[in-house]
Image (tube, rainbow, N blue to C red; front, side):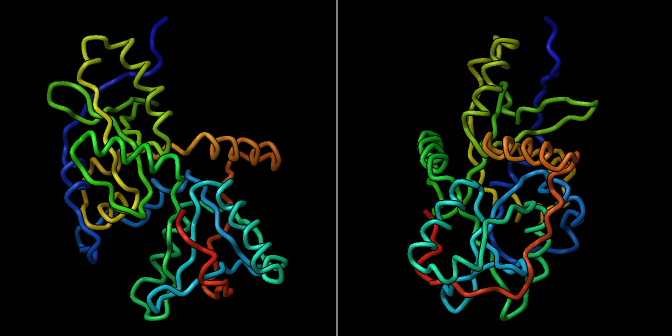
Length: 269
């Protein structure tokens, strides 16, 4: 059967740009337009804990207000269950709220530069963190603690990023789960056996990818496609079925009047 996916590889500037960026202030004149960044992030659902007014609960960390944004719905539910045990009165007033990663980004931008602004703390999936550490160790790199790992593949003699062509557009898929990338690579190896030995998996933190988009106006960055975890894909499907709509990302971003939580409760796992 003929493959429905066309494979290619690209060198571009995306690799050096992402791996070389820091967490400093973005150079606005060089950044991708915010609409483009939001478009890349929008398809990914994430989860936070909010009160009845939609305000996120926060903790104090180094004199800053911080709220957790969970990549996994299950992790958010576990945190909520812990909150029910440790602070039952607060737990009665809050709930787990899905929201688009694109909306979280817009909210974080609205807080940027404000002395009392709310800081976003992305909470990764523990299993994927451990897998990311293994990959980076094999690649001679050290995993930066406290970040959300994304998995991407390089292929070919020139070690370009693996691209797929869909609807006449070339995309570079970045995965929140290593297993999903491995499934894609198994298919790639069967269809391109001559390149099978050249395949290499790399890890790039979500936070660095976003920072790069804010600092580099590189066309290759517009080709990045974030692939939600299997759990999140199931959430999207169930949301579509329940609402009878084609777009599950209709949730609003957190509001800027946070509710207070116990500082010990909301921690990265």
